Length: 365
Image (tube, rainbow, N blue to C red; front, side, top):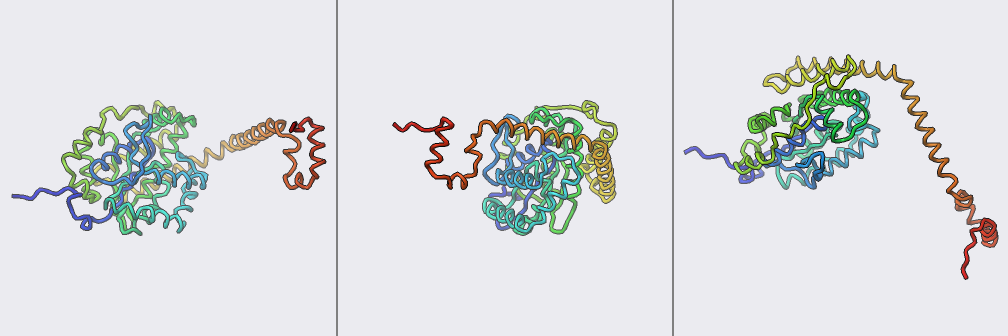
């Protein structure tokens, strides 16, 4: 009789190689769904996790520490989570090359392998720092593997506008999607020490999560998924909601500028090919390199034309700051505006006289 495969937690953990699955992609593209599936199949999300909220009531399946450190680094680099600037990658790239940052991440990863040899790290900010995480994982003796979620850009934009109350407009959000996905594709290309990458359509995950996640597990050599248990499969069936795709839209609904509309559509079309078997080829990489150059040209052209708007916004910000400062000034007394060391040098009797003259003398009787 053929021996049935054993579940991962029944196997000798020392016999299972360390791996870290990095789930990348734009926010609202299904990254939480994929991370939620693989964690329910047995992979470990380092704790504590980000708690659920109204925008994602089933949970994010992302470590709170990862979100916090990414927020810190993005703030330092002056980069937004949904940043459409091609130069933003150079700003975060400088942080990725810092040795203290790499040590910090590898030291955070290391103890979590005591819980399970295969970890999953997911955060919409992750793509900005993939190079750093790759190095950190390898330093812990783990093999980094990558899964990038693909969801139609119009649905991503619509979901962000619905759940995040984003007021930056469809054009900005579409451009940031193009910027994010083109550079994520570049950052996850095979490198020394890697264990592979896959691209997963959100639609495929909702339609047939078993087939999609099984293919992912075999492609990346994730023993947890390959040897999953029947009770874990039932748990994922309860987790997957056929109505998870709550926002549907097309590019035409976004009313984008013509060139951005075309480039967004081309990028989506080419990304879809990567999700097909045999689609991740050198020829495809060359196509993405060309698309990335076209996006840089488009952005630089738009920035050059809109320079006056940028200057106007900066001047408007300064005027507002000055107005707010002037509004606060009357509430501060003359004494409050005198430096503390100067006030301290004034004799107490003189200070009492000034307070009495200003009507601020205290009645201690």
